[in-house]
Image 1 (tube, chains in turn red, green):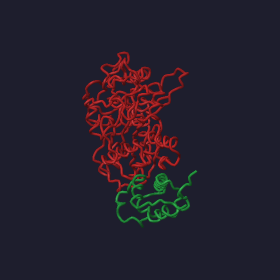
Image 2 (cartoon, helix red, strand yellow):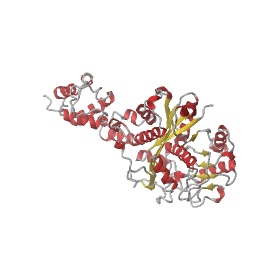
Image 3 (cartoon, chains in turn brown, green):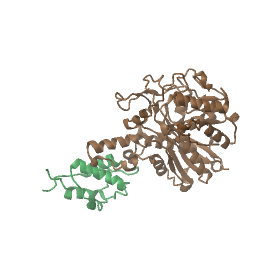
Image 4 (tube, chains in turn green, brown):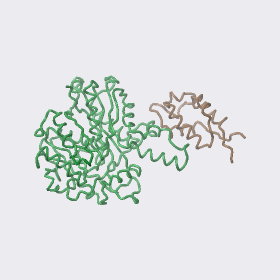
Length: 393
Length: 90
């Protein structure tokens, strides 16, 4: 079977714009969680977020695209530019129909959509942007990346909420295996506006703690919900042999295994499908749990979900059987961008042989039996990583 | 009554920039009066957006069938300045 390897990374994260800035901040344990400034949170119970700051869209986005793109799409286009640049590939030498785009989305470009709905209701239909017709749409990041880089091969968008970044990469691998030599994948999301905020609050799982250092403490006895952030990562998957043929300068790693499961209905009392998904992904990679050197956790930060995840991990690896980390404690959960950022983080971890830390959690709850990497990075030279993610039900 | 609107090329290029941006390699401050919107990098959606802005800013209505034939800045300005309908008060 054709190996799908990652040859380019582009990161737009709250704690770093660009791959190296993000990675440096992540190893240093620099959290970007802070009181939300994008809009007035006075009437909302949750007030901490991971905002991408310092992104000047005009420096990255052509003038013609500015009126027709949401903040989310601008971040995605910038990350895609970085990821494609990182591959060193000259796209003009590759066939247009041999390049595809598969990204993840959650609610679409809700900030753009909210602004145009406000225009509609407060001023009238004449004031609604013609670009609302597609700028809000779930598939807009995929579409704009595809148009900008003239990638006409198999493309799509996956909407599986916070698991989307992994599902997109899994689907991209499928396209590579079916004969598309290069697929741009991952996910970048941004919903830090009232319309994006309210549905997260309605989940009942968002932290209402106002201290940014205490708001998101997955696997801790003080776990109190999660914090939402914006951003994500774009990754470029290539067929290993065609990457080699074009003289790819770097291979970050291989997407060796992928699996997804559905949870049983709560009334059945059966356990979540997370462990089965992990087992299937490890088997798909031709490995056993002993071959996994680090687990990037979903880290919901909600006690019952943390417990379920810890049970899945210890069930597979044994108590304290594998290092577990959640660098997303520095960014918040990035919706459709979160698992994609974990993919990029895991690949950087393999590149440099170091596991980035989980911040703000001093010790995990002992009952979970996790070997959580806290405080400092750990130099254990990992060769393979397992990334877990779950959608909100 | 006749429309009192006078829209200049400078007004139009400003609105084009605001509504739809400026294509790389195109200079809207150059001699663009007779260059087709297509060659200036504006597609139909961009034109829809800029026509919307013109109508809002000048309080005029530009009939769809007339807009369909205005494929250059000169033709659009002529349309705006001659048959732009000012909605009657009341």
